[in-house]
Every structure is written in C-alpha cells, then in structure tokens.
Length: 247
Image (cartoon, rainbow, N blue to C red; front, top):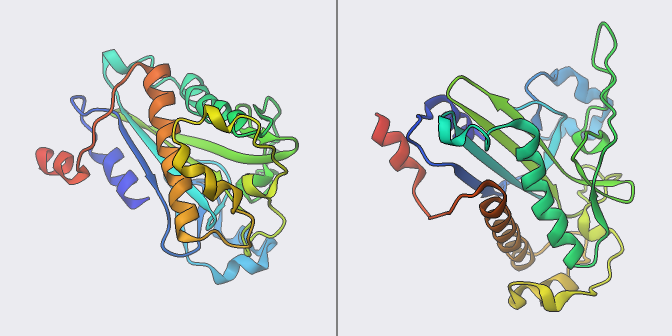
C-alpha cells in the first residue's frame, strides 16, 4: 500500500491509468484513513497482527485470504468522467458481479448502508466486511468485496479488497469460497485452466496454486471490465519507470 500512496503523491496529468492487484506476504491489518488504532480492542485477536494505515477511508481489513486491488486515475480532462466516484465503483464492481454470476454465485450490488454517524463518533463496525455501503458486492447477506477512495488535486486512488476465504483472524467473516455455489456456467469462463482449482478450493487455507488461479481471474476480470466500462486499453509496465520519469 505504500506503493499506492507514493503513486498518488507523485501522479502527473500525462500518466496512464494504473491498475495493481496484489497479495500480502503475511496477515496484516489495514486501517481506514480516519480510524483509530485503539478501536481494534473490539477484536482482541487482531492485536497480534502488524498494521498499516491506508490513504483511503472505510473500515479495517485483515489482508489474509483475500486479494487487494488499486486503481489510480490522473486528474486530466479526458479522464474526468472516469474519475467520478460512483461510476468508478460501479464499473469495477459490476465487472466482478458478472464474473461471480458466471461462476454460479448470486452476487449483486448492495444498495443498503450502515453509515450512521453520531455527532461525536463513527458508529459503524470497525471491520470493513461488517459494514455495508451502496455498491458493495454481496451474496445474500455476505459482503465479499468493498472499495474506498482518496482524491487529491492531481488524481484519484481507489482501493478494494476481495474476500476469498474465511481467515483464522476473522473467523466470523465468510469469503466467496465459503458460500454455497453451483458451477452452472463454467463453459462461459474465458480461461478454462482455472476451473479445476475452483472445485478444490474448500480447505481452511488456500494453496499457493489456488490463490494464483484466483489472482488470474481477478486480473482478467478487472482488466476486461474496466476496459469496457471506462474505455481504456491496458499494457504491462514498470511502476518505477513512472516515478523515475518524474524524478
């Protein structure tokens, strides 16, 4: 996430839209920008985890059995529509909803909200996946993907977390693979090579191969969904080249 923050601090109008998808090398708690670290006492098991603070808002996330994505959109005239808050949420989340439905899950966009603030403090749950915001992705009453944004004069950063599996650190939170599924439309998947791993993804922890397959699906979903919704095309590149160019 430090890379995302550095990109946001250094973004220039001539940069392309930057999409990143990544995993964490150890379970880590990330706090929303406005959260207090003292509030994790509500969940004592989280006290054992290292923690970081995101530039984006929202609730705390345990980055364990999940995938994190970030999208950086420079502030310039031809990107003005792409960087509008709710359309960007809907473009990205709708791409995931379509994919989950193809895989047999009855995913949909949430239109409910737990964002009730008192005069003195935020009364929402500490953990992101216990909250609901419009355009979160839910399956039944289970939230599996949420996003948050941070805007500066130079650009917009959107972070999102895709909860794949129940983590030992948050045993009360189910991920996508903990929800009953029916593989009714596997023939519609763009990449048949990932199907076998889905059928085996029912253990307490995902194997490296299984997680890699889900990474491939997430990357394919985000790239194709955003290319269609935001009218962009993608090419691979090195982030250091952007920073060095400006330095």
